[in-house]
Length: 268
Image (cartoon, rainbow, N blue to C red; front, side, top):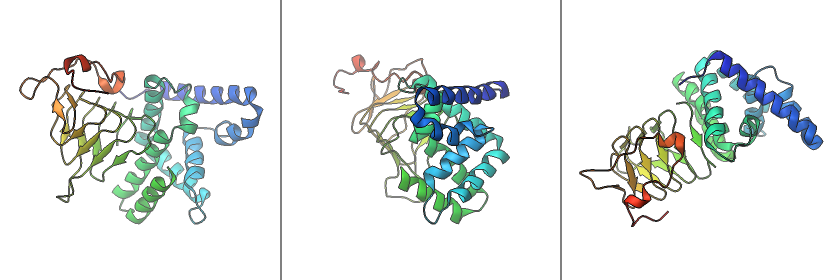
């Protein structure tokens, strides 16, 4: 559910309060926190500045990237709302996320997601050379809401993949193609899905709303809503004809183990 303007404003106020607290507690970080957060009047400007510095190179200047990101966030309220929704998702779901400012500054999954959204916006505006250059730079350095890329290391998302709202994706996950077809060839991930570490989902398959993909699974088939798939190749827990169902939203609960008792052969 999208946040209200009041909730969005509260998140930015919280980020600045956290940065001020950390600067006072650790003077060595004061200059860094001032330049990235405290000197800016809005989350748009802070995030644009931080992304520009993270992604710049000798030929792709930070000032150019700052203007590019700021124009995108300022002109598209959906991008702003999505960024705040992702901050809230990390803070609520990840026990290692100690503050909103920690996510903003240090979570490469969060930062990559925001940069890719801007690249996608450029692509849809027919600015494809710039979109491709930005996407390539994002890959070198390291469209939905409340997405958590937990750790984000080794995550591969194919060109035509679609990721729904309230999705949580662990490290070393691949949403790839089979290599056999072109066009629309990558997975479609429904709302509320949880994808465990090292899982591989290949082809234009559909992972239904609220489904759970066990760690290390290789999924080549559609997975019905609110169903768990585990193994290599992945099978539906409880059997193909009568898969067991779960009532929670795995992408939010981050529950990786509740199905193990139902399938004793599965090892996590």
